[in-house]
Amino acid sequence: MKIAERTYVISGGASGLGLATARDLHAHGAYVSLLDLNSDSGSKIVSELGSRAKFFEVDVSDTDSIAEAIKGTGAWVKETGKDIGGVVAGAGVGLPGLIIDKKNEPIPISSIDFVLNINLRGTLDLIRQVLPYMTTANHEGPDGERGVIIMIASSAAFDGQMGQVAYAASKGAVASLTLPLARDLSKYGIRAVTIAPALFDSNMTKMLSSKVKLSLMNAMEFPKRAGQPEEFARVVRDSVENSMLNGTVIRLDGAMRMPARL
Image 1 (spheres, rainbow, N blue to C red):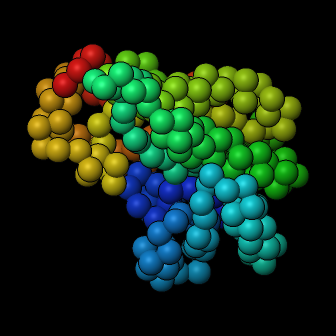
Image 2 (image 1 turned 180 degrees about the vertical axis):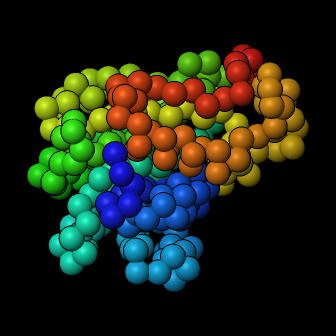
């Protein structure tokens, strides 16, 4: 599928992996609709990228907030005539916590809800609200393709560490829903792909201590370093362009298998 002259909706698009993705797709001729809570960063990025970029301040755990952004994106698409060709659900959080602590206190349900509401519910809510625009878009190419849904899981979906029950649950769910989503959307010519990165330079990993980062990098086989956002964006681009990528989860982790504890 062609990237140029199509609109891509990217949540978490004002920083980290989402921003790298937005820059890469934009550099290849895409229109990008950036959804993020950071309005200052979002406004600066739009000023930098120009007329093929729009920013919407969005809390992906709030259905109405997503709805306003998608309504605004839909209106923009009507102006430009550039159909929505894809969604990159990049908004995510990590809030580590043992299921029961040393004081024999269970993790607060509010902590679990916070992670699940953004990483899982927010992903599904964004996708379901964008889809009516995608299913009615013009198809292209010999396969009659309309677009692609790209989600972000994590290596924690497969080998989560202590304290990652909520995070691993949210990312494991995203990985698990990839195939049924692809099956639901196959009749519309829309694909579903999930990327599961390990340690990448991002706002989330910036919060980790140097000791934790070193321990994680030591668990990587090759290369022994954090992934770069541009390397993630390259896989997103290939997921858009390669129509045989569908219903699958791509591990992007330098052969890393996380140990039980750091």
